[in-house]
Length: 385
Image (cartoon, rainbow, N blue to C red; front, side, top):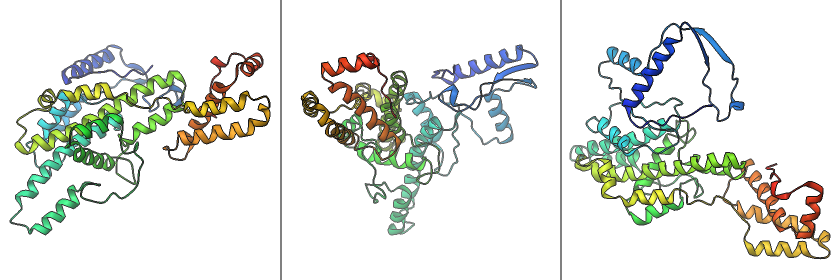
């Protein structure tokens, strides 16, 4: 079983790493292990074979970083624990600010995590928010030296925000653009959140896979992708996906709030930490805690339409009505998932809702007949076809 260990401070990381390295050394030269592979389920991995090698040595990640620094003295390695598929701790944001605030906009920064996907992308967005602040300051210092029209054009090219001061190049639906209920609450309560969201969205897209960006995951659009999987998954897998979706909404929310903090406090030289900013605006913590689960977890055909279908199925000549009933169920299913892009997720979601609706509208006499032939309907698995 693959467990994600949740660790919130670098000291605990270092202690665990050193203890693990010592335990490996104790086991001697014949080292048996399973190769780490990407995949949510064991059956998705290439193999689960036990491998054996002669142990030549054990080197911890901290030791690797220290060796690199010996070769490149200017390199400053910093470990910031972020847990998989979760928002960074408020202290994590402050670690990134402390690391970057006294550097120049051109100072290169490298972020990495074990898989190089969501945590790396999250840190890249955080770092880029600080870098854009620094670039704004440096360009502003050039005013009076460089002609204003050239400087303004350069700022627009480097720092322009889609939907704010440059045109949006493509149409995407509300869910792809992160317009979740709690995000809309944030935008309504804090006027500064609109520009902060636009900036975060631009950076997330730049860190997304090609053709939009040059990275490996869009940490905003992955939320609706997980939601589409949730709609067609079994109950046990839905429990995992629900927690993942809520955590990712929280992460997106925190990135927008962090952008608000950078834009407000950064120009003053960061006299206040992000944690202090959150203490001062503690309603934000309440907002995300109460709002991270505000999502339509189960789509259901409206009651008035169900009544219409039940009447058709309860009629004496219900068999003659069956083509109309089936056609109507699929039309309603199409309407219920009209916001999803075409593809297998949409098809599977429609089929699942259609199957559940058919079971729900069965009159008692027909339900009894079906159960007599097929078993209890309550325990019937709903196929996603």
